[in-house]
Length: 73
Image (tube, rainbow, N blue to C red; front, side, top):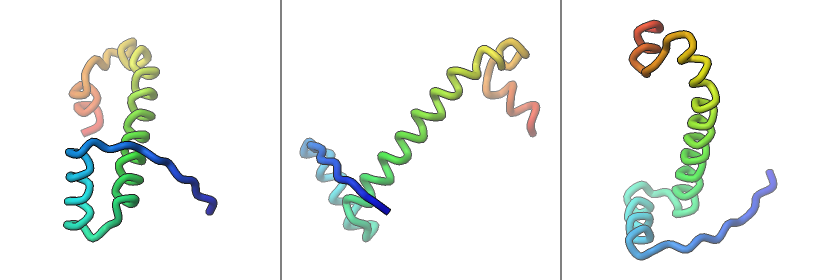
């Protein structure tokens, strides 16, 4: 698998949080950063899909998450 590098700047607070979680979890800073980026990108993708689907859902009377949950539970 080919990999690439990304350099980012962290403020002191974020760096301290990253170091703390790294020590506590036994994972590298890179592993934690990759996981956080992966989660954020998946969330952004989900939100974009949801935004595109909302007009279709609303046309069928699904206005809230509760409307959908009531149909599937």
